[in-house]
Length: 113
Length: 114
Image (tube, each protein chain N blue to C red):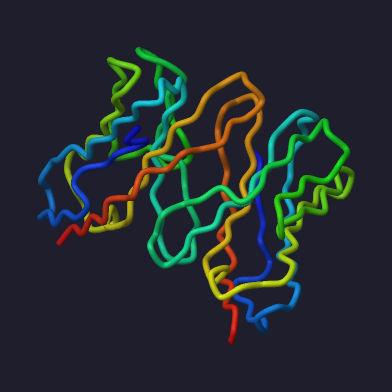
C-alpha cells in the first residue's frame, strides 16, 4: 500500500528565511501525482504546488518550489522569503491511477516575525 | 461559481443517531471524495466517486455510506454515530484525466458525537 511520510511534525522559522518541508512516499507505481496543500487557521485546504511523476523538471509556483527525487521517492517543498501568511499546516499528498489520494500527517509551520 | 459547498458547518449528534453531511459542486467535476481530519492523523479518505453511479471505499469507510446519483452531489451518511466519528469532515472534487487532479475542497464540517 502507498504511504506518505512527513517527518517534521512542527517547524518554526523567521520571516524572510527559507524553509524546506520534507516528504517521502512509498509506491511501486511509475505514474502518479504529488501535491502540497496548505491549511491555514481558517481550515480551508489550498493547493500550493503539484508535480507529475513523469516530468523530471521540478515544479515552481512563485516562492514555492519542490525538489522531486523520483528514485529516492522524495518530494520536499521549499518556501523562499517566507511570509507571516505562510503560517499553516502543510500536507504532502500522493495520487495514482487508482484515484485514491493519500495524505501525510502534516507539518505545522510557524513563521515568526 | 460557488465551488464546493458543504452543509452543515457544525453538528452535534448523540451516539446512535444518524445524519447526512451534504456536499455539492458546480464545476462539473467527475471525481468527488470525502475525508476526515483528526489531530495528528492528516486527512484520511473515507469514500470516493469517479462519476455518477460509481462509488468506492477509501482508507476508513466503516460506519459511513455514500451514493452519487448526480454529478453535482455526493452526500455522506453516518448510519449510527459513534464518539470515534468525532472529526472534521472535508468534501473535495476534481477533474479526471486532464493531467491536473487538483482537489478543490469544501470548507469542512465539524462533527461532535457525544
